[in-house]
Image 1 (tube, helix red, strand yellow):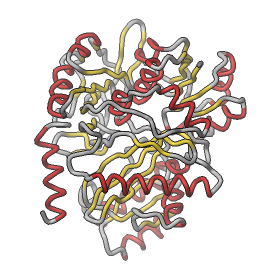
Image 2 (cartoon, helix red, strand yellow; image 1 turned 30 degrees about the vertical axis):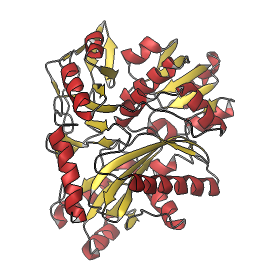
Image 3 (cartoon, helix red, strand yellow; image 1 turned 90 degrees about the vertical axis):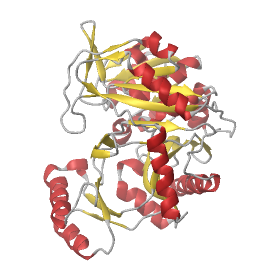
Length: 440
């Protein structure tokens, strides 16, 4: 089958590799010349990933029958609606269904309307004055977010990034003054616990779970520094995480199923991968965000482990015929992102970077190209994350070791890595934190 993929990051490279393993004939659209994707594609087009007209033309020119959209921005502008109007099946959500991510107030309102478990107290505002009144009177710690898309970097948390009333108001005013996210501010109750990601495949009514993942947003080791798009992530053998029980995971899956049911009821059935980001609290999983796509970096963990035919899974998502027989290998994975120096504040970009794929694979790891560009025979870093390295093994400890060994084969004078991701010490901190909260 001829398959269109849109997006040129690490998440999309991981998806392209999975489609390639499954025999897909791939045609890719991306804004950067990602060498990993180019290597697997029959053809590719470099253009704005939101250029709906050009992308549809490219898909028709190449006789594409199925499309997979990686990033959220093309979903927000209705790329799926346009492709479906051309008769092309899509394993990704329509513009209306993608609101579950593109509008945080839509997501909270939907969960509220259908009395779905796991919601947090929240209020959304279209002006700073009303937001200020709310902040003055709220009786719990808060999280401040732009309502619209910010590439995973717009969240600020009281007690971590915001330490005073003035800090909170400065950020709220910044969101309005700079039009960050483009849709106002949402203020949510701060949930205390450990974050985890439960992603699922969805066909409009049925869901099939992927292994649990934990992402690391903070830029620097020890979980400090600014929020980023994600510095790395890990899965454990057996697809749970060390601080989560099977029943707690089932609670999260029930929440996602209820959201999928509610969206069908609302007339915007959801098809494609769905990303549930939860905080595990002493009162069970609470919804932090629902995203209309794979997570990045989490896609690299789970798609590396995917045993089933990904072309078939995408076809089944697109046609409403998903079964519960999607299989993953039982191994553990640890992903660490190589990022440009200064990432999270001001990235040093345009620097030459080299990647020795063969040596990385001999270490028991995989390399996924992300925000890099091929120019004049050189591979150059961009302003966002550069290369995802995923170590794979039967245990998390071995997977982390494989990842670290493989990182030696990525060379650049202006890169950094969070080396603590997936280490025994950091994972144990998560386990101890949950034990403390549970009073154990």
